[in-house]
Amino acid sequence: MPGPKDLDPSSSPRALLGAELRHAREKAGLSQEKLGQLLFASGSFVGQLEAGTRRIQPEQARLLDEALGTGDFFQRNCGASAKSRYPEHFAEAAEAEAEATEIRHYAPLLIPGLLQTPAYARAVNRAYDPTAPEETIDEWVAGRMARTRLLDDPTKPLLWVVLDEAVLRRRTGGRAVMAEALAHVIGLARQSRVIVQVLPFDAGAHKAMEGSLKLMDFEDAPPLVYFEGPGTGRLEDDPATVAQLRFTFQLLAASALSPQKSLALIEAVAQDYAHEEQP
Image (cartoon, rainbow, N blue to C red; front, side, top):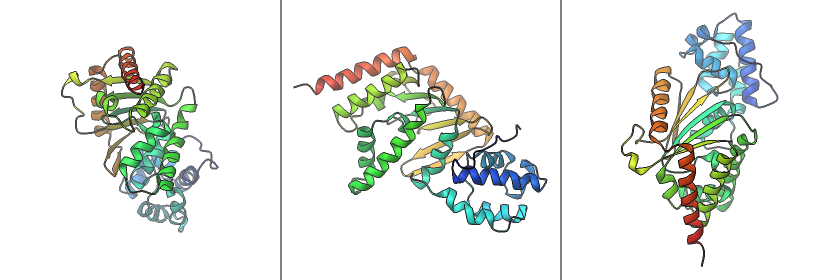
């Protein structure tokens, strides 16, 4: 397993904690695999903690302090790394997303957060919670837009998205919002910032009909897959599960329209929405 990269401790509390974990582990003369055994986890999981792609949970912090002789350092500090502007079920996935070098995402129902416009994000969040105060919706939208800044880097992460055709057809926020949202996706694809494919309705049944999936690869940590449902989410690092879902994504991409034909379809649907807005 490659050694963990040097982290910038000033970048985030999670990065600081990962750097301190690596230092304490090496000082104790333990390998990632050995420390993983003491945590009832894998060595690769320890690598993810050190690389900052996974968060140290309170019970893990207690076990780390016991195993590494660090008093209550990790228990005292894991709370700071747990603070997030994102919902609890998604916070760890958002943090991992920010560290990923490659992201492959199958979206069956809505435009992925990294590709959303503010108006589309507002419509989605309002649908999630129709009774939420406007200030809460503003906060959620701001958090989602903060995630999109990952794409300000012209090359990293590699983002490859397969959209179900239902994503294009569901009028989220109304026709004007959809026209703008799809135009934004088209713009990112035209700039070669994202690979976009559409899985058309006539592709029929497929292997991912039960929900979305997001695969994330990292420079110095094992890959992760994220599953999401209404109000729930789960990160998985089991190699067999990740390999199986990577194959699932490959099948989806093979069944989808080519990037060129996908853009043509998205443009046609966007134009339909825009023309419907005309008097």
